[in-house]
Image 1 (spheres, rainbow, N blue to C red):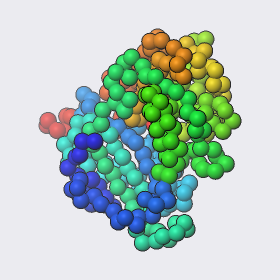
Image 2 (cartoon, protein in one colour):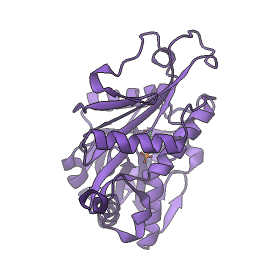
Image 3 (cartoon, rainbow, N blue to C red):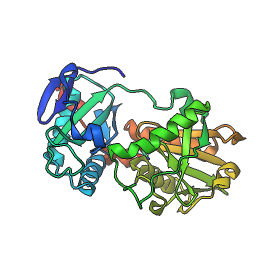
Length: 310
Ligand SMILES: Cc1ncc(COP(=O)(O)O)c(C=O)c1O
């Protein structure tokens, strides 16, 4: 990770190296935190945050699901993020807001513990590599199943829940694959360790529904919109594991990874990225970088270029 100059913590801008917490921070012990992964891109209008409002909404909802009162409103967090990017002089970056139970209370009952908020921004390249985005990645179905709604809240992007993704990632990385695909508790395809999944069969896009314990991905939502606009049918339905091997095309979507084709799953060759994947990926990249006028409202411009130069 490339350190930046400043981090925002509980209303203050502090030096990167000074952004510290106590070792008895509640969230560190019990995973009692919620977070977001957001990206900002360089565009002709200036640095712009992709679907910022939707990410801040999801952050607030994740916090609410764990009865965590947010000490700052969405507009405050939005403004803080803008200023943080500007102070760090970043043209494009990854943005990580974290809301967590802080220091002062131990034990599992968290409702008396403080709630702290931090936002970090740093330069971060393609999560699964530029080559992965171009040529596709090798994936493996993990033996670990995605967390079940019977025991946790798949809809929440909560820190402790990510031990599930970490186990899957570790397992498949040790086996020599680029990414893991998790099945849900029923054995249907769910998602990648940090991405949603799309499968092309008979020219239509399939993606697992909310009832398959997915995270409600913002990239997923954007890709569903783009695919529909390009004229590809999209069906949200359960996907059997073997359908991954029989697919014409498979790709993963997420803020960190962006849109990544999958060229091999469990040693079944799917081949080079297909036509539908390519078409959607190209339009998605246009949307991220402000080249798609029809999706201009997805971008939250940090400082309009015209205002900088005037
Ligand atoms: C488990 C999981 N699923 C899916 C996604 C994709 O979500 P988004 O497109 O909102 O980044 C992520 C990344 O945030 C994730 O961590």
